[in-house]
Image 1 (spheres, one colour):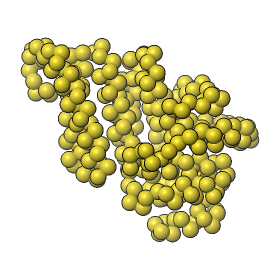
Image 2 (cartoon, one colour):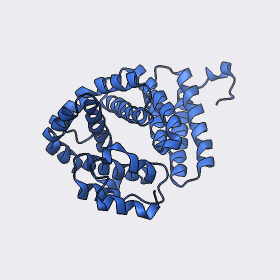
Image 3 (cartoon, helix red, strand yellow):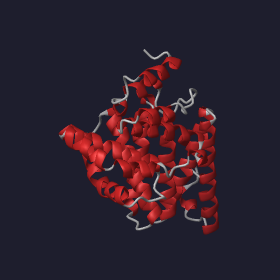
Length: 276
């Protein structure tokens, strides 16, 4: 499709568009599968194929909200494979693409709105880790605050627990930068609501990459709540072979683990990685 003459693109009929849209989704899913199997070079080829087809179809049909949503979802899903420091710049670029597309939709559809919240929270976390664009971080915090307030008082079973944890931890640290005591009081006030939300998730239904991310985010949340036993139980489920999410060194320096960093269990966990 990327090499198809522009004048002939106009001749593609509805059935061909549907076929190409589905073809691009299959390429996107297969690219993700290959990356989970650490076949990066082959995964990149299918990723590029999926992206090229979706972008060209979107040029033909700029008002196709489902196509735009799937392209945004594709970028966001791919970004999950670049959560460590080495891939953080690429992750931020992918999330910026995902957010730019979903913001253009301005849809009232619940799934698309939820996707926007998820992309915004993931971008906030990525920017915070790289200490980039403080102004955008504050803008994202302000835009996500009503959603967090709603989730803390009216839990949504459909909302991703991992992204909920990101909203809580990022909100805590932005408060702590201004008033540490107030941030701690806010966290304690909502602790039971947070724990109730955490109890709703089932990691067994997640993909391998999502499952690793799930364990790390859970351990961060429990650590921030100063619950070392639960934090270590979640952290110990992380597979040593995991390379897409945070490395052991990144986990060790992650500020969410500050309250338990000196505990014997936390120190012992790192010995298997020989982290100094």
